[in-house]
Image 1 (tube, one colour):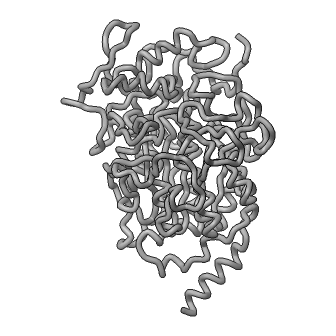
Image 2 (cartoon, helix red, strand yellow):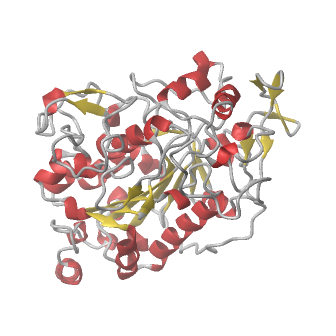
Image 3 (cartoon, helix red, strand yellow):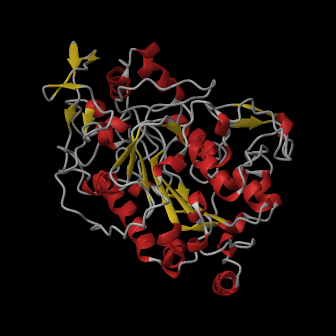
Length: 488
């Protein structure tokens, strides 16, 4: 008992109130040596990158449910309306990829009733009409169309090293069959909606196609007239009510995506102070009412926090455009960004009690051969890569459970909230959502990706700039442009 009290007092004195975070940190719990099972995880870090399908990154990973092959050759072939024949998946070692449209409509077209034959048609359709002054995809060769391309372990060696040493999830689906904003809303709230009366959750109705965002009205501050208002309940409401610390780190730069998953648009700056597609929390009534806006922080504040060992219980990290892997940004830049984040955590004192969940927000128009399960009218979307990196993660394990971003919320609730759900019937803040996503019968259990009975793994520190087989694309600018003129 005396040792437990010393552990708790030491955590409180060394951390106190986290800078800008006005709740007691979850590190008040007993030290990890005194905890069992899932509760050995005292820090959850979710890193969400952009726009890659599972087959695009891990389609040839040994043992995974990847691209169907026979005698080393793909057995699937998707029609190419321009070429007049079909195109099979092929190794694509270009650092710059074009991708395809990734709106809710594009998802429906790619899926095409389960035939999975719309990927090339959607990319061709965009490239035939793209405004040449506004997107790099219009400047480089589209032969062959790269939505059928896949990367290998030589291209993304760090991502494959994480898979070999920790857990790869080969049935991780985007929560929504739509673009970035709906999926980011699901990541923090399990719903995407549109509210007609500010502050009234019962005025919200389902909208996973085009929920209100700040793009079309300018970067208006939350709570101002005309700004989007998210009145339904998000996870931070439960965290705050239970004195569980959290932080949402935003990389400064340009926003990685365009409205409704469009391929090109005028650039918009993002920061911790600018609500947007990748920073939706300022528009949630609960965050403002709980005085938690200070928990939304610039990414540069993350590195010293992790180095000191003062991570909050729950951390979300989102990139800026240039390191997001959103086509047409470089794969190598995103891999380096993620590696630096993970190395920082592994070098810090919190590694021994941390679970890192690395995921991509949607499929980005790239081919995937698995038909998504249908849990409700909003999803799931296509498969995306998912990795679990932790000292307690099963080693070299492929998790084939059906998962979605909702599994992260479920894990956090089970670890820190005694299994409380974002359920309007029980969470004390009713809203009209029709589905409690964490309770979907199809959804797997992330705790099965861990072995808490074994000694924790040592850190796996990887080179931030590894040697890869990636190469420049014909016509690719030396440095991919981050901004495009809004004029034709």
